[in-house]
Structures are given as structure tokens and as C-alpha cells.
Image (cartoon, rainbow over the protein chains, first blue to last red):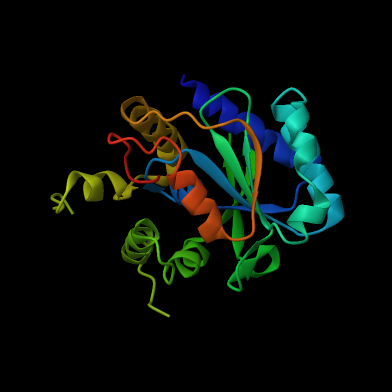
Length: 159
Length: 73
């Protein structure tokens, strides 16, 4: 099995074990919903509370053998002026993009999610409609293409 | 939709492919692994912080921006 699979499962399992309040968005979420495109990252929107950021640190620590750089993921940043934090682990090909808000568009509480299960791990994934809403009005061509694919696949109405 | 047409390879590579829900996760993982083999990039390690999504996307696009770099994933 590819390393990426184990790595993904390890991270998602750690999120569940630590009780992280999160929702998967981006290409990985699209993959869970049955629309496949390649990506290098795991986009995670988390609930913006100090306790939840602590859970995030514990989960990443469990997944990546207590990498000391994880201590740089701070409540004061994610709840303050830096709502987007990228974590590039010491090994592996995957990186994790953690967000507490997406501009004025979305935060954890406003993104509808559903639970998918893979190898006994419960994964909180944005619904197709929620993914569509996140992507449809962005500037990046890739996101617009994703939005069009989501709309077609899930017969979503343009809002 | 048995035939799909694209204006460029870039457009084709970025186009999402439908998959059955039962094996969507494994197809997603295999697709990522395949793509990484032909479009490997090395990123600096650690934690990086951004004020906006746009700022984060710009920073990511600047990594490994050689002539062989592909469209941001």
C-alpha cells in the first residue's frame, strides 16, 4: 500500500482519538465524496477555540512522533491574525493546512458536514453542497473547476 | 459521460474524476500517489502561518517554481 494511505489514516485516526472538532474540505473531502483529483495537502477547517487548537497539536503530535515544530501551532495565531497555518511534517509527502476561518465566507460552524467511515475511522467531511459553496466564487481556476464538477455530479443548483 | 474533452494537459490533470463511493478513498489515495511521482515537489518543513488563504496559496505556488512545475494541486 502507498505510504500516503497509512499517513492519511494515521492523521484522521488521531483527529478522532483526540476529539478534534474539524471538517475536511478541499480535494481530500471531494475524494471522500467520490470526486477524485490529486492533491498534496489535507485541508482542515477547525473550530476556533483554544481547547480545539490544543487537541489539534496533540493529534498531530500523535501522528508525527511529537515533532517539536508542532509547538509552533499557537492558539494566539489561529484565533488571531493567522487563521491559516500549514504544517509540513518532517517526513512524508503530505502536508496539513489548518484553517479557523475562510475570509468572510466560512468557519467551522457554518460548513455543513457528514461522517464518512474508512477502516473504522470516522471522518468529518464537508457535504458536496458545502464544498460547492466554498469553491464557486473563489478566484482560483482550480476551485472553479472543482465547483463545476461538484455541481454536475451532485446536481446542485447554482446559488 | 464516456468521453471528456480538454483544452490542455493541465486542464485534464486538474479535472476531478467520478468514483463509486465504496472505493472513493482508495482511488483518491492512488491518484495522489501517481500524480506525485510525475510532479514531485519538495517543501520546506515546519509550520508556516498566513493571514489569508490567498497569501497561503501564493506562498505555496512559489515553492519549486521551476519550468517543470505543474499547476498548484
